[in-house]
Length: 438
Image (cartoon, rainbow, N blue to C red; front, side, top):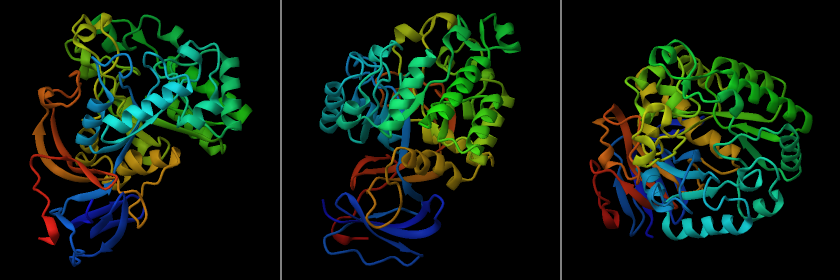
């Protein structure tokens, strides 16, 4: 690939610098950053992209995406999921082990990595199962799985409910310096619940899920972390009590981090409306007070990362009565546009949002996400102002179950670059000028 100059940009490097500048790329690395309004001379033979003042930032990192391949390619493939990710400005995604077969052996990790290398246009990092077959009983081989390329261990949509198994998993994770990512939801307390327990559930005549289904599991896990000293990540929290538990754990110096689904950050239980099954999620959408509490926790740094919780479902599992529909919705392509609602509403600053979407998840995964010479050339150019109405027919995912269908959004990825190569270009954005032309 020829050298690439991204000029006339607004550089947003979370926690470091925000202001005008230009970025030189060479191969799969950032060659140089030029700060200020002066446009540098391109290198001989360089391609040039005029960024038109849009924000350029390290690519987004999504720590929770369900991909159907292998076994459920009718819902999603690595190719379609990565295309959706690129369209949403996501340059790295962590895929969950809920596949068929389950990602619980080195051979399956190797398959996913090879398949992603051949068909995906973004970085795909496989997570491996904590227990064999996601059954919650027998642990997987952490050492072999990590050596094969697994970046974290999780049972995906299932929580490890057996405390002894979880203690052993955390002990092994500590010894192998591995990350445990737990879906904090106690299934027995969830029972037949399908939405947040409260007045809204009573009005709709639906079984509710108490917040304690989340907090009981989270409190138990934090105590086991205190016992073992392992790195622990609560995949998604959604209520003030959970925030308080994580806050105390961090104040006590425990190696605990947590995430929040974009759905719980910008939607509430009122969005279920007339039984919209696209809004049947896990954790469920909660009250507006709960949503505001998660936004504040994000600003305070208690919540570390924002995830899409991308979980495509087919028509047969969503076009059903609410109580019978499957949990899950698309999210990876709408992650950025939905998150920018918080910026436009004045609830959070752009650079702080990008910390949770890029810098912090990269840090947790041990990856480099900076705008600095020598850093990977995984970047996204964002127009924070472009308005549009989301049309699910234009989504790149194979499934179309988005809770933001027909929603008015503002802000989108104009250009996504992975390894120095442009993998997505918005139709509203211009072409590359070859050979150093302006």
